[in-house]
Image (cartoon, rainbow, N blue to C red; front, side):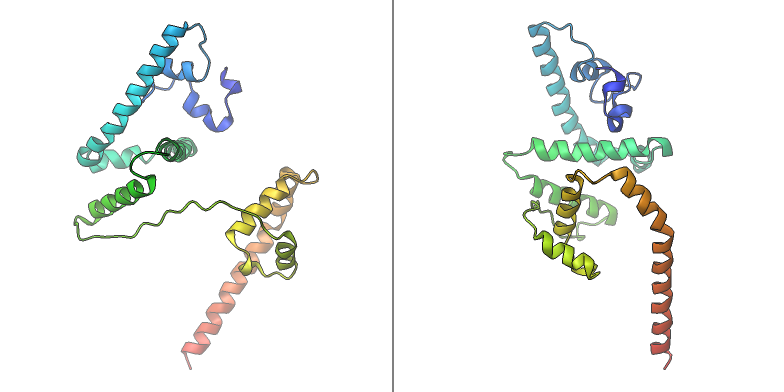
Length: 216
C-alpha cells in the first residue's frame, strides 16, 4: 500500500517519515501492507511484538497520568494548527480502539471511562471531594417515521426533531441516487450568510424584549 492508497484522514499517521510512537516505522509498514516479504513465522513474531508494545503502552499511561508534568502534558495536546486535524483523528480513533478492544473485558468500558473522567476532574480540582456524574450510553439509531420527519420539516418544527431522527434522515438522504453532497454543500454555503443574519436578528430581538421586560 502506497501513501496514495491510504485514506486522506490517515495519511498524517501513515507518513513513512514520522518518528516511532507505540508503533515503529517497520510496524506501520507491516500493518499498512507496505512490506509484504514476511514468512509466516516472521509475521507471527511481528504481530506478537506489536501486541506486547500496545499492552505496555497501556500500562505506561498510568505513569504518564501520575507523573508527567502538567506543562509537558499540555504541550502534547497543543499541536500546531496544520497537525490539529490529525491529532483529533488520532484521539478519536484511540477511543474507538479502546471501546472496541474492551468489548467483553471483565470491567465494562463505561465504568473505566467514568472512573477515568472522575480522576481527571479530581486532579483538576486538587481534591478528592470533587465528585461528578459521567453519563455514557450507546443507543443505536433505529427506525424513524420518514413522513413524520418530513412533516416537521415542512412545518419548520425543527425543535421537535430528535437527534435520532436527524441522523437517520441524513443517512437516508445520502443513500438516495439524487443526493449529491457537493451540490448540497454549495447550496448550503450560499445560504449561510442569510442564516447567520437571521440568527443575529433573532438574538437582538430577544435582547430588546428582555430589556423591555426588566426595565418596567
